[in-house]
Image 1: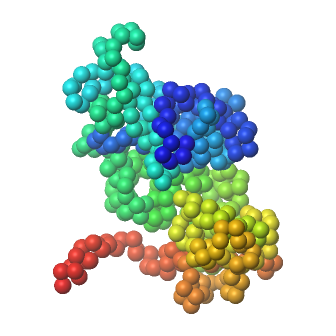
Image 2: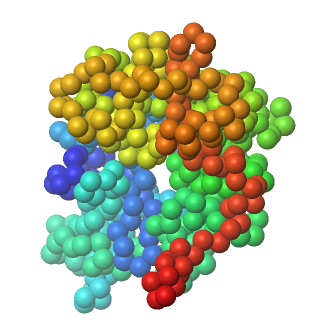
Image 3: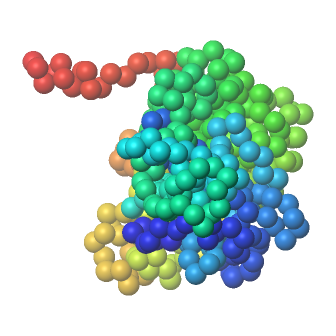
Length: 426
C-alpha cells in the first residue's frame, strides 16, 4: 500500500496470500505484530506472522513488504524462514487486540474492539495502527446489538503503556525516537541485566543498528545472552563489515557456529570480509554498495539511491560494473556521483557519465593509505577493486573514522545544542 493510500482493516488481512516479486505464493498472513507506545501514541506495526506452505510460521518485517493491495501482500522476496517467536514487548493484533474490552476516553463507556486499521506513514516505510472499530454495549451481548463506530487510536483507553512504567517495554517506547548511536549510549550505561532485557526486546533490525554503535565488550556481552538463532538473525541484519568485526572477537568455535546458523549468502559475505586484515580497505569495506550495469539509466540509479536502508555515505555514489551485479562483480568501470545523477536527464545511461579518473583502493591498502585517499579527494565512499578488476565492496568514511578514533571515543559526551547556545549567546 503506497503512502497516502486508504487504510486497511486487519480483519481483511487475515489469511490473505503473500507473494514474492516473481508472483510465487510463499504463504498466508496469520497475524500482525505491533509494539505499543507510551501514552496514546499509535502502536508501530513491526511485521506480519506468515504461515508458509510447510505450515511453519515466520516473521515478515514490514520493511520487506512492498505492497498490500487487491487482497495480497507483495514482499521483497527475502524471507527468513526461522520459526516466529513472540517477544515480551510485542502484541499480536488479531490474537490479543480484537475482542478486547477498552473504554472511550471522552465518556468512559466500555466498548469491545471489533477491528483496527493500519496505515503507512507518508514518505516512510513505517506503519501504524491508527484507528479502532468498536461496538458499544456490555460484554457478552450479541454482536448484532449495539452501536458501532470507528475512532482514532488515542480516543480509547486500555491498550497503551503507562507513562511512568519501569519495564523494558516502557523503556523501549520512551527511547523509540533516539538515533541508534544515542540508544547505544543509553544501553552502554545500563546495568548488564537491564541491558540484556532491552536488547532482547528490540527487533532484529533495531538491535543490529544499535550493536554497530556499541563498544566491542558490550557487543560481545549482548550477543552472548541472545539465543543462538536470534544472534544469527541479528548478525544477518548488521552491515557485513560490522558483523565480521564482531565475529572476529569471538572464540573460533562460537564464530563458526553462528556463521553456520546464518543465511548462506550473508555468511559468505562475512567470511569474505574476515579473510582481510581488519585495518585494511578489505577489512573496512562493506560488500553491499549500489552496483549498476552500464546500460542502467539515471532514473534506475536514483531509485536505488532513494532506498531508506542505505547510509548517506553509501547513497552518495553508484558503482558501474559488468555483470555479475553482486560483489565480487564483473569488471569495474567507474563511479557515478550523486550530484552528477541530479544533473543529467533520467534516461541517460550511467555508462556514459562514469568518473574513471580516480584509481580505486586495493583490498590490502592499509588504514593510513585509505584515510589519505579520503582526505585528498574529499570522498565519503570509495570503491575497493581486486587485481582482476572486480569490485569487492566500498569503504565509507564513517568506518575509517571509527577505526582512527581512540577506543573510548564513544564515552565522549556530545552536547552540541548547549554548545551552540553558548556560542550564540557570546
